[in-house]
Image (cartoon, rainbow, N blue to C red):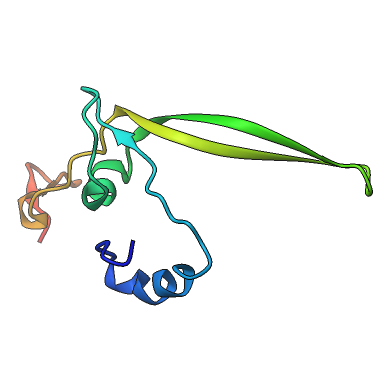
Length: 105
């Protein structure tokens, strides 16, 4: 885990978690069933519609008469990919009240 690539803004927190947590990436699969590498999670999953496979674990604390339910996620399947990124903002055309179309800039 120490050699995993981590976004610069997350490196400090990741280093703090290493000694106390067992960190495992969740398997994520694209629409064709191919495994998405963790390095591509942000680009392939942000804004995507996914199906999450998970199980609930139940613990009963007898002493306190308390029930605890924990969801454990097993995998993600992409159902619909993220929306396409816009092209150059200078290519967008604004339709105004005046005649014809005008450029947005």
